[in-house]
Image 1 (cartoon, helix red, strand yellow):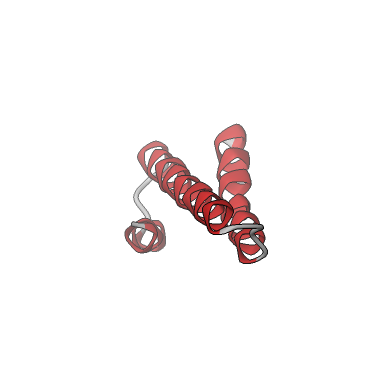
Image 2: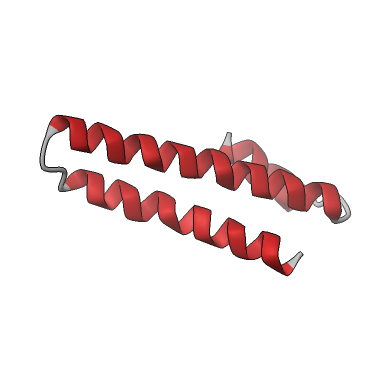
Length: 70
């Protein structure tokens, strides 16, 4: 479980980092690419959250976070 939570932290923090980089994109294509990476990291974060939910007892807070991440 520790590894899964670590992967979640990596993916979740990458969302903001890539979006921040997108703001300083060198071109429109670079901006779009960085935003697309942010979206992919958000989808990955949602995957890790769902996996944690499946492995642990159901939590209302976790369900709310998963729904929000969609």
